[in-house]
Length: 450
Ligand SMILES: [Zn+2]
Image: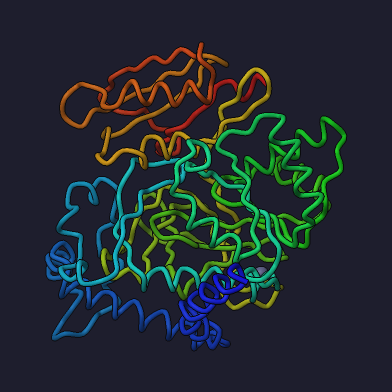
């Protein structure tokens, strides 16, 4: 009875939270309406940024983007690319003057690449984010994510360290018919248990980090275990290599759908049944640029530049997210009107691996270094697993050369990697970039040896 009442109350709130935004998205049933919607929201955001965000006020004046209170969109591509460095340097100048009047919160940058930053988001942003996700599930995958049975393979910090903060999430999971399987650390026993849970729960939907799904499938294959076939499997958060996709699809005996998002701007694109990634252009405006900031042509690879249309607390305009993607065709056989990416090419993350086959998700380190402590620990970092029991941590320090919470960090790492794991800290001036010019801050050299 109590459970039912809680579900009723939360469902009601949930239902009303983004219904309006979702119905607006749903009404964009031809190309003209879609473009008009996108343009209207882009102009509205730019005007807001001009009036309320000191950093943009200055820049828009310099390039003449706003004249007599009207936005001249032909100057949009003159707005300098927003980098993580700029966000760090001009942080307070990038906040909207009125953000404290909104229902705001911090979001630490996650993913696996790029240096850490903190973005301010608010509940209006959240409603659009949820509406965009709902669009993907209902309109593109034809599944009601809110009511279907699902298993989410995700990194849950509170479960791992037995914090009491998980109650809200538990209630919310109950409502959403969700079973959450923690993948920050997955021993072979855990994987075995997770497969049993999937097989007995018989979910409609399985969603998880691509690397965790891959690990689960590798194990099932090794042990010759059968895995229940849900209607839909969605891989998120990381690069999906053809090998990973092949293994996941073979073991689950169903197509894997790739969802592309980032913590700074949430959902960017989702894969359709034809295999193209449709950009949620009503939510994020995406540009794919070459090395000279020119637009690439269809089939060409470039940098992903994002403008979120709905973050008014801290407008994110022409943001270099740190990924590369290949621009896809304007039209897709599936009939969806949204523009496409052929694929997202530039995300590389790797799990740490232990000798007994246990994998440690890169998300563990991301949360440990970015989300656990109140203050920001380092300017930049890179964590490299050099051998099963050897970790090297490169640090670009903020100011002084001490390592805050060193003992605590090492204890937590050893809890995951084993007591005898050696951790070497090294101060460096810069973290070396990959050939494509990206930071990779979690890297396992053991992976290739497995
Ligand atoms: Zn399509």
